[in-house]
Image (tube, rainbow over the protein chains, first blue to last red):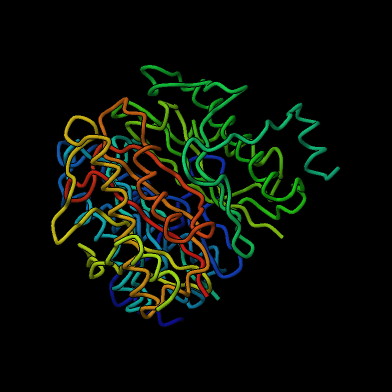
Length: 154
Length: 154
Length: 154
């Protein structure tokens, strides 16, 4: 069991079956040392844990938890793409975070921290990443958050 | 003529003159084995084939066709960037799909499939890619869809 | 002093202290020859120079100036990440530009040119880049524009 698996166990996190994409693409693609993971929405036990816009339909706290859920799902996808070996991840490079929100909502960084903090919890300094976080007026399946990932792998 | 050109001919698709960017940037940039193609909007014979938001101004079917059109334009740009040789594309890595839509619209994956399915039609397994598809409230020139592309090339 | 520093001096531009991220991520990450810079918002002397949506709350001209400001900030981040040596930038690869706007606004390319033109002013042909520019209904801290960057470095 890799150090990362141990860390996940310490955090009490069991990676889910990687969510299947809801459309005709694949969950992850590797090119040289880049692993690109498709946009993840907050499926938990097969249902979306957060729907609608922040803050009118989903609170900041719920959205932040949803961003963390997206990150857990993204890590599950990465693990599957790497043949089950999370130890092959050298670092997290970039997160793209899309928050479904009402016009004028301006706390996307707080919401996105749900995903960003998770990466640092799991990978330590190697989890620190570049990020773009923006608001949008709609997301697939009315999810509150979508997060995409780029990892450097070996 | 490369296998990919043959495939396009089989599909009855003639790649257009690569659309010129509507601003001060370039259609595509290569770095090592990555070819990054700028966001494409659904120009067809010089006019946008779909304007406005889904579903109030553009149907899902029209938007899906527009996404396919964006993909055709993206492939035309890639061809020009590769000196005319589509055989240099090793695989499609990532599509970023932005769908102009009304708040609450949640079928971005269906729309984005217009672009994703095209890549698989043309490249087969090498056309399978990672993807982020989101909704937005506005796009350049009021286009209904914008798609950006990353290819792995040789 | 590198040629790029000279060029900035010719343009009368002093790079600011790199803006600190407003959340738990890092300003830039390098992987092989890619330098990925986090989404920048238009902080100038510690305050946002443009807030709200285009055109109802911010004019196109202001938003364009804000996009340029984001680009200056992105370059400041890149410089810090490269140990102060902008000469290590081989070219600008991609800009992702998010414009906070009202529904139906369609001049994102004009706004984004504020960032794109700056890169060409500074780097010449090496500043020409691929780009995706879209509208969104909300951005962090109510900023009018957010721009993220990918550079090729040595």
